[in-house]
Amino acid sequence: MKPGSGASAQIHTAPAKRGIDERCVVTPPRCFGIVSSRLVALVGHRRRATTQPSSRLFPQARHAKNTSHLGPLILALAAFLVFGCDRGDSAAPAPTTAAAITAPPIRIVSLAPSVTETLFALGVGDRVVGVTRFCDFPVAATMLPKIGGLTDVDVEVVLSLKPDLVVGVTSKTGSSLERTLRAAQVDTLFLAVETFDDVQSSLRTLGARVGATERAETLAAAIGAIDVTPHAAAPSVLVLFGRDPWIAAGPKTFADEMIRRAGGRNVLADLDTPYPTLDVERLSAIAPDIIIDTSWGAGEPGPVPVAKASAIVRLNPALIRPGPRLAAAMMAFREAIVAAETP
View 1 (tube, rainbow, N blue to C red):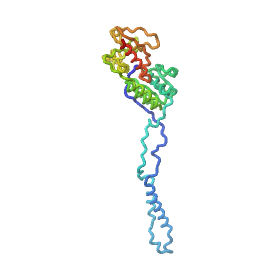
View 2 (view 1 turned 180 degrees about the horizontal axis):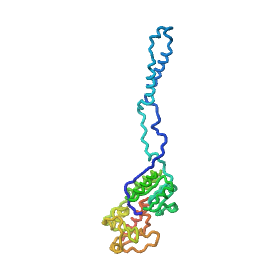
View 3 (view 1 turned 30 degrees about the horizontal axis):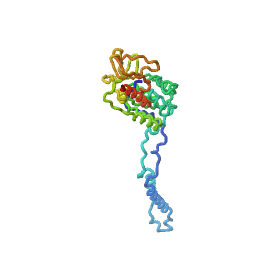
View 4 (view 1 turned 90 degrees about the vertical axis):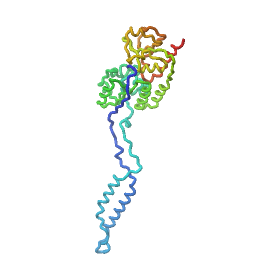
């Protein structure tokens, strides 16, 4: 996965099963006492009127009022009592959203190595049921079912795992995959990881979604505490991602921000390509002060054909992921730059 690709976070929640709507529960209105007392008075008056003695036995009874017309009025007042009164100060129920009633997921599929690392760091690794073939940390993640790679996700495999949440990072292929999962009524969460601020925000967003808010805040705070040390004469740095062909970190990438925050200067900052591919001739013309080589993977690193370099630092490529180990990666970057500055 190339670090630094992303846009704004996108959340989709599948329709949830709804229970009793609290808005349908009738509560006693404020005017209950007023209307009920009037209703009782009218009923009592009518009862007294209808039980008067015969006017032939008691002539004065013929002057009593005829109350038979009160029947409809009593019914109207009863209806008003139940449905028509102002509820006064009683608060209207807050609108209920799908996100508010969604419980933390228990079956999660990860679509990116950085997401997998984050889920385990949040303490919910036991809920992860599927990962990509590039998810190699922690070791427990390598034993989980594989759903494909970063750009060739097998949707049928994802659906067979019956996830209640699928988490990925925003990308060109992510949008179409998200639409496909939406059509299958699967909850999705796609996170932006383009900058340090994005990583902090994504940690908090994912932590809230899986019910690990406190742990997410701790991880985000550790990244926020990374010191940005300005340098008048910052050493030039070349970060390599791959060999055959050589792929490097260009401008406006996640690694570019790491270099600047660690006190260095990206030797390829003037290019227009975020991840330039360099042939041997072009690479040999570059003369950085420091090379941070993450291209060697698990094998024995070979030489880097550059003109010169004060130092070459071999770094685990997994550390360049925009995830919870970012603080450790920044420490390695900083140590390399400090070593290069020391005579």
